[in-house]
Length: 290
Image (cartoon, rainbow, N blue to C red; front, side, top):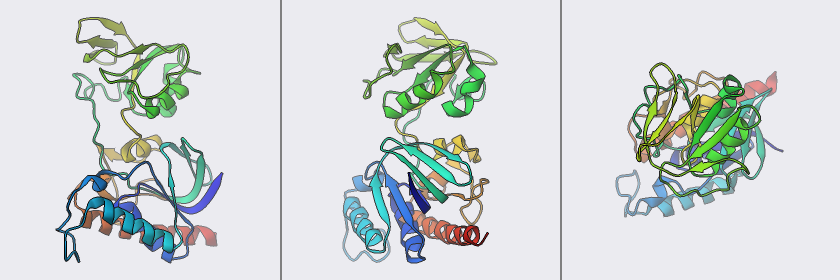
């Protein structure tokens, strides 16, 4: 298992900005990114400080990656599914596990959400976003995971040893990962999540229905907010709550960029990344003294 002073989840402007500062400060730094992120899809950027000519988002990201590597940061491609703490942070991904003294969540804002009747109303009443956190409450009961990618399959893996039975719901999307053997996959579009005070089932657009005790939402990849929730960090809707130093309520855990809400601009993300880096540098140096 790889061990670092700082691990940054997300290789967009906030994460890479932070990596420049932590690397220059002499902290071993790892940046983990699944892909190029939303910025790489920008064809032209011309409202960022110092740009005499427009530049593509992809070029800006790649230039900063080179800069971070030149300063000593390690960059890897992986998808993080879970984060936990035990005398340090442990991050679990598709390619392996990683450890760090401090972690920055900087994966941008969530762009995949389930616009299904009842899902928001029943959050915390049978609708969950963290299998490893809440699986215990569904011992021997019937649950479903909503999603169609690797993250959904990972959450199923956390539930199967505990729940009585589980089903995978793709809500009309094509399954892009291998479901565990024996787990039913239902591809129909969902009309509603049913229940008044707690989840009782799911009704599909064709009028069919299945009874459930719980629904675990795992759409797309595990974003910053999803990871924050798994370790007990405070969130407000789809953003992570931080103080003025970009620290969450979990010591050693920080967030920066679009996942904290506010002005969704490169300049804001870069600034928050720098601010988070300064806080992490101070935190890690204090940890090393103790």
